Amino acid sequence: MSGVDWVHHNLTTKRVICRRAAARKTRESHGFAIVDNATPNVSIPSRERNVRNGSRDVHARIDGAIRAADDGQPDTKGLRRITYNPFRSALFHYSDDGQEWKGSARVIVTGGYAYEVKK
Image (cartoon, rainbow, N blue to C red; front, top):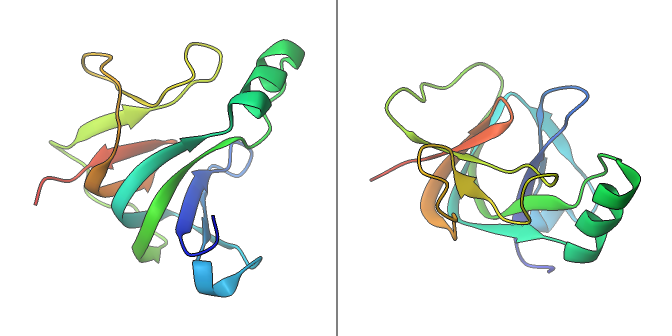
């Protein structure tokens, strides 16, 4: 998808990798990112290959418009946590009740999770 920003969590460095649509192939590494109009994006063939091989290659991300990205630790207290584990499900879901997450107006991505921000 070329006109959209995206972010994913780096499992090795524990940082958020951001790719802005205007930057094409350039990626930035940050402690957190705030993404507007956020939607999940999972490559099912890549996920199936990762599960079959037990690998942890990037195949899932959050698409949207990166509103801000910085180092530090944002306040996520009281926000609903969104998680993704390819070995358990092919979907992003809410940690509290397991319901599928299909997108939000705004999320904060940090520490291996996304957090839904209610405006």
